[in-house]
Image (cartoon, rainbow over all chains, first blue to last red; front, side, top):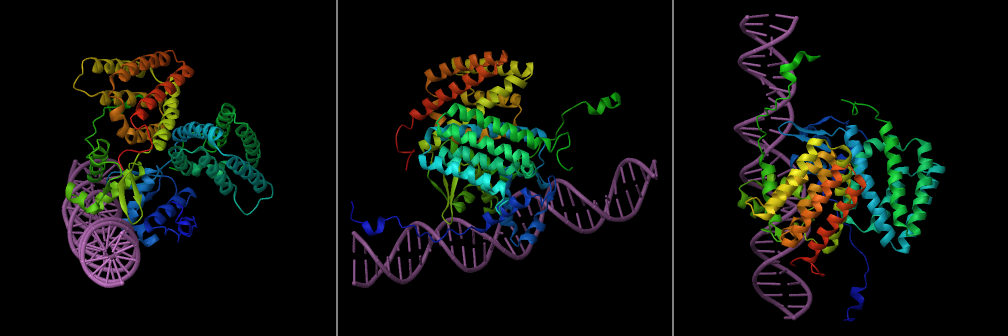
Length: 234
Length: 234
DNA sequence: CCTTGTTTTTTGCCATACAAAAATACAATG
DNA sequence: CATTGTATTTTTGTATGGCAAAAAACAAGG
């Protein structure tokens, strides 16, 4: 039925899906936590947050559930929420999982990604190199975020993507420090270039190995910042 | 300092942490969904659920957030919650992730598990074989659950454990059917025995491969039950 | 039958209330 | 003074009712 030519022409004029208050609250809190505005272990009093953000307890609490599911905050029954502390145990666990899931994404990308996506990925890496070189306005993190989005999109595994996004934010508390060491960033880019090469060659085994190494290195760099028993502020 | 012998003796006499209403609601709903009491795609009206379960909308909505984070239900803004439908796309994604995370657990178990845990794991497999043989009261699923718990405990990666538990419940909609085919169960046990062997030999590479195969087989069996385009009831 | 208007549901958010648990401050007692 | 006990205040967990706005269901009118 080619009759509806004028209508089915996919003219995308979506009005913009309004954020929804609860989501905004969740996002704000997420940010507040990852940038360290709330310290790990700090207790979060509902009433205070409500006043602070100008929303009702109902909405706030629902937002808190989301963060709880993300593992960003921890609930002790009848004691309330507190910002989760990242023990080095947990940090290690996170990086172990990241290895597997990013490795998977790499494999899948090598298998399934379109030429477009390949090019987009390569482009984002070069963009990343630029950002590093001339200290552009955009932060390293932002551009790296784009790189990730392309990778995950091309991998075509939403489940893995969700999980990675979660542990990503969760590990942000560490990475803020970890990526700022410029030598590591330099090396990181070399690794990513090699990674792209492997992907373009559709060599999934190599991509897998490179990915594991990359995450391994990132982990070493990050864990250096919390070397010993103490998690990160008591 | 061996002075505190009477106190530091880890005598576990926790009083019992009472369930908490919201958690009960969440758990009930989870079950209701996995056993199919609510069909995939079915819309969940808050008021109805409230009456049904005898709780306030406040508590109910918070519970729904949890299920949402688990991916069990889906929220369409201003349209409400509905039971998530498992497209074969998503199912495939889930099994891909399962492969990686269980594989990781296998590796870690091989590296870190104590002799105790090895024995416990082996025991649970034999128990599983028994349950299969004489159709004991305990369901296959329950015992396999114990197997999993031991494996994950021994692996010592809480992050991976959490994620696995989530996708486990999420995939239950399929597995209810998949594991009931008795030939598959038979074979599944053979695989698990070999898996145990590898773990006891601390051969992590072999364990990894066996684990991947095992999940792969499970996936094939499960996906056979939803062969084509139609997800599972519209 | 398709379009348009009207009513009913249902969601999203808020304010308030209140019992019970926890934290805190304070008193008393050894 | 340290410990134990008690009273006061916070804070959580849950419930109720309310209301605007989106969606769904329904009713006319072309």
